[in-house]
Length: 404
Image (cartoon, rainbow, N blue to C red; front, side):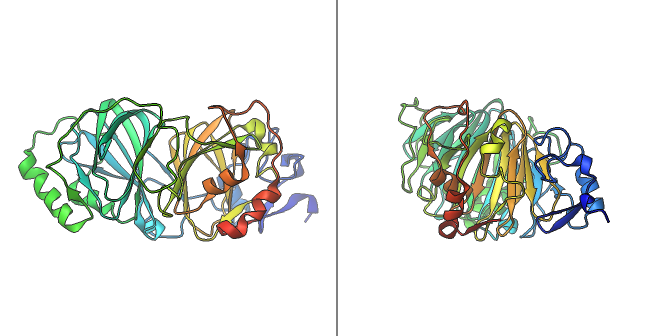
């Protein structure tokens, strides 16, 4: 075989004619533009020429087993309708995939009543508004969340939420995983496109018995004695992370931010605010800055040994490369679950992208914040300085990851 036709990449073999290789020598960069990754060589073709590079699994429901990376749309998942709620709950990642480290739940709905005050003894809830508006109560505080706004509700916090408007969407992380079984107990499977708007069943016959059963079985303590109150105005002080485990609200586009190679990482909840249980932040970048970023070197990946990750694309498009699978482009509304021990890299393939990164501990968000320098604005820098990848490598032992 002509050596020009064989490229070794991350212990996998791609058989490609020389004309399909870019000058970067990265087999994942094909055609005229390195950023149009795999546009001219589809995942199916890669699978045909390389038995190891199978297409990344795309599913409409979580696979129900650990150790399997997969892509899922935020409109899919195991969809559960809670009677009388005018909303749908979508289980995107469950405890079965994460060894009960966390679960990720999406919710969409129309204007309804607050769900009722309650608290959890051990479970930590978060609320990330993606579209529309949602009221979130946490002890004596209540804010109306818009797109990108966030609320953290640690154990012991009396809370409730209320979906507002004709169509609102939010995403939540539940720690520990397994608690999502609560929704299966109180709800029922739903196959429609969105959610029912008309439900004339009686609350006391349909929902109340299931709520009582769930309250006894799961970590949920109802607080019907707590008096309701209306949402309060944002004070302008919701722009910092508390640095400890307590309820808080964070306004979109505020809070700390760190820039490295033109990419900006905005932590939303770190292990300090979650008592070491999880982290969440946004990662914003541009295809214009790929050559300055941490994955500029062809084929370079990171692998976290102890921490699971999930990435949700909020704006633009991002191509992910996982070891043993063909590169896959994620678009708005898609989520990728990456179990611990899986090497990965990613590249923005749009002019601007924003994705949220969830992790079951000190994960990529924490690392990027340590790497970066403080960033003062709400948008990307106009130009990018090449980041020093040796700084990334030096953090590996502390955060239990390897740069490949």
